[in-house]
Length: 273
Image (cartoon, rainbow, N blue to C red; front, side, top):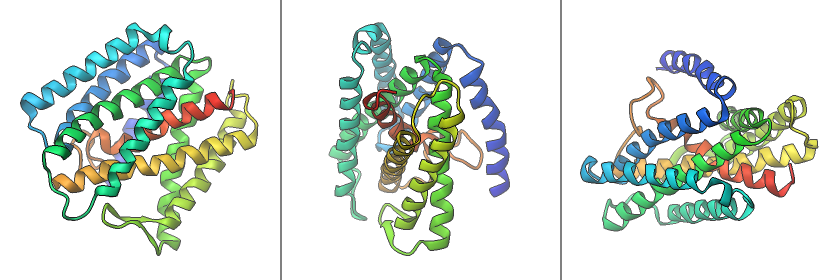
């Protein structure tokens, strides 16, 4: 399994970098939208919904939302702080759903309704944030900074958790996560974001700003991971899909990114970067 995961990652990494640096910004936005439609489809399983009609309705609505956001792009991006503040607020409300989780949580009507709404919010806010970021000056470098921050948080959490992990973070949702892992992930993300941001072209930010940006993104990324894990545990799924050998589905790979992207963008805006 480890070998399969490594081989898949080695194949995906150059493809991701090519999409970021070789594609024009508009091409990146459309490709990202198509990929995230796959994430919307995967979410129907996480919500305990049937493929038809609910999975089909979900991806239809998701495509419509993206189309509306594109058609009104100049309007809502004229002052992007309020839209992304609302996106972060939406994520905060979704995180509150984890307080209701317990081993006895059932796939009932409320869970399905919330899951359907969650799917639309997760994909729409993540797509909007990543698209806006790519369309900014030096947007490809900002996207790379976001990605390496998320990756550093994951790696730092893994090793810190293995070395020092004792107190569990959310044992009923993700038994392997510990508070030590969170601290290690936040520290790693802050350090890597600072190091990469200092040398990346076009990112004119002070080290403290970069460290804060990395730390905030890392904290929220943990919430995104737990949020998807909560859905998987409730419906009894190990993975969101089988798109990537050894890695599961698309949402398994981008759950942290979807949560972290709107907060990354809002922090960037508030810092005037």
